[in-house]
Image (cartoon, rainbow, N blue to C red):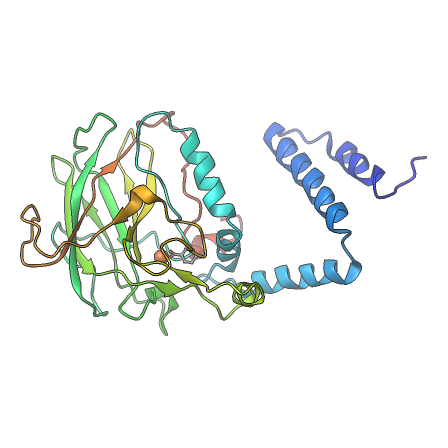
Length: 303
Ligand code: BEZ
Ligand code: FE
C-alpha cells in the first residue's frame, strides 16, 4: 500500500482522476491539482491559513447575488481575468483591437437605442460623444455591427450598484450604420473605486493597494462572422492609468477627449473617437471570448 505524504499525495490524486472521460476536463483538473499542491508545498501552508482561505472563499461566494459578482472581482484583482484575455487575444491571428476586462457590471439586456442617442437616463455628468467605425482587419467597415456600451455615473457607480439595481442606466446597444460607423452620447468617464465593501475589498486593503480603476467606458462589439470584441477605452491623464487595480489598461486603448473635433458627427460636444477592428471568426461555432457574464446569469444554477 502506498504511503501518503507531502510528495506522494499529488500522484495519488492524479491517478484517481485519470479515468475522466472529457479530455479537456482531465487536462485542466490535473494541472490545477499539480499547481495547487505545489503552491501549498512552496509556502508550507499551515492549517489555520488553509482555514482562513476556505473562510475567505466562502465569504466571496456569499457576497455573490444576481447583481453582484465577487468571484469575478477576485479574479480581476488577482490578474487572472487579464491573463485569460491575453491568452484569448494570442489566438487571434489577424490584426484586431485588444480586448480588455468585461468586469462584474455587464448586463445582457441593455436597451436598444438609435445612433446619436444618449445612454444616460438618470445619471448626470459632463456629456461626451463617442464615435468611430467598426472595421475588419482590412480596414473595411462592418455594416450593422452591434455595439454595446456601459459606464458609471458622475459618482463612479454602475446602475447595478445603486439602491434599486433593476433600474438600468448608462448602458445601451446600438447598430452601426451601413459603413460600420457608430456615434452615441454618454458622460465623460471618471475613475472609480472597485467595490470595497466585501472580502475582495478587505484583501485589497490588507495589501495596501489603492483599489481604483482609471476612467474608462466598456464596449462589447459583435457582428456575424467576426470574433466578438470585449474591450474598454481609457482616458489619458488619469492618476491611475499605470496602476489599474484589475490590470485592464493597455496603451492602444488609451484615448483623449477632444473639445472641438471637426470630424465629430455631433459638433459642439466634447468627443472621443475610436475605430474598433474585429477579427474574422476562427470557427463559426467558437465559444465566446467573454471573460465574464451578466451576474444574474452566473447565479442561475449551471449558468
Ligand atoms: C469594471 O470596469 O467595470 C470593473 C472591472 C473589474 C473590477 C471592477 C470593475
Ligand atoms: Fe468599469
